[in-house]
Amino acid sequence: MTDSKNIHPGEPRSTYVLEPPPPPPPPVLDKPWREINWGDKQSTLQYVNDYKPHIEGRYLRILLHGPVGAGKSSFINSVKSVLQGKMCGAALVANIGGDCFTKKFTTYKIEKGNPSTFYPFVFNDIMGLDPSKGVLVDDIKLALMGHVKDDYRFNPERTLSEGDPSYNTEVSPNNEVHVLVCVIPADTVNQISQEVIRKVGEIRKAASELGILQVAVLTKIDEACPEIEKDLKNVYKSVYLKEKMEQFSADVGIPMNCIFPMKNYFEEIDLNDDVDSLILSTLRKIIDFGDEFINHKMNQSEG
Image (cartoon, helix red, strand yellow):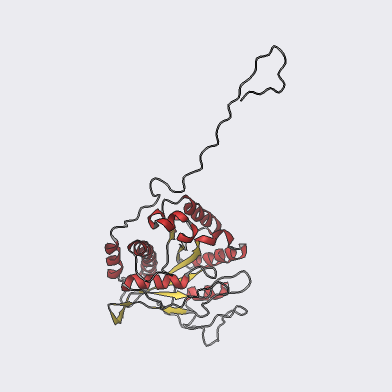
């Protein structure tokens, strides 16, 4: 293009070439930034089946928390479905938005092989976090220490206190939480209020003071990214999802290697190998974190 502005007679005319805008970054990377063995879910399943805590009679307690509607109950159902090889729905799930569906402190055991045998880990589901209502942070702190009895109905207006029938005064090692899992919906991670982020940070600090290891699980990844919806194996190639994980990591301080994207079973009626692989990969990491905490506590007591 020739620019005719401010050109005087006899002066050479300047020619400017407008550079085309750079192409947008690709929605998926050529290579995944984190590896997962999609074709060998059986080895991970065997790892989970073979796991036993080093202390006889002990089991891992995994506490889930996060915003209302994040998919905590669906996470429990998804893990149970994979381990039992069929669709399960032990943890009730709401199919509409709004207030938190889970109201009580509930422990979920997963049967292993027959009704009298269970996996050596349990999940605790709790009321969701909310800017103005929902579970109180102080109640989650009590749950971390093992002071909340099963079936306690959370009161958004009042913290559980000593002397209440649901307050567990005598805490055994099996009452204590070994892994804290923050469940976050990837499709609305940008919309989480600063107040909820603050509460997550406060809970994280309390867990850190107790030495409890923490991970985060990003659910609804297929709803957050069209490329993942097309092919779940794009989960660690998705530029968008990696950015969301990095943003959440910066917001709450959970390292990237402790954040795991996952798709829960929700609408499906049959199991899928790729979904199973991602669920089992996440579960294995949670078990490893919990086992590390139990071993650390055991070494401290022996010392």
